[in-house]
Image 1 (cartoon, one colour):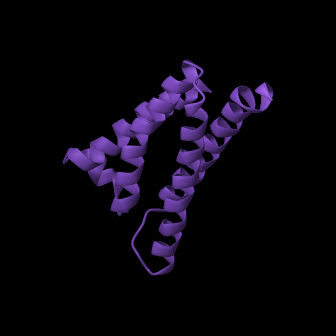
Image 2 (cartoon, rainbow, N blue to C red; image 1 turned 60 degrees about the vertical axis):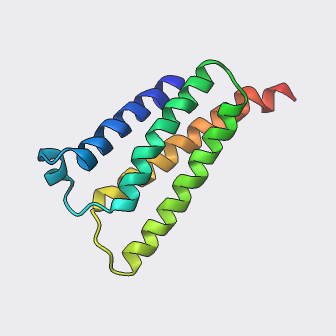
Length: 121
């Protein structure tokens, strides 16, 4: 799971950064992206890397960080759903990406919880 978290973090930073900071083909390809979701995911990518480091070092705080990532991702996903419901512009692939992010981080958090907390009790 550490490798998945690390790769996910790198890819998130690269893809978000290329849309946010480079006026080029990635921004054009992004289409009607939702800025607050893009900014959240970009910043979250750095926390993904931090969580990956904590998981690699087998630190208890990495469990709580992973859980925080899941919770904040779900909150942003819910706000994104409200944005869509209120007629805001969006790309359909953002729905899939947020579902994937939520699922991957839920799996990482569950894995970390079981490995570092549940098995110690």
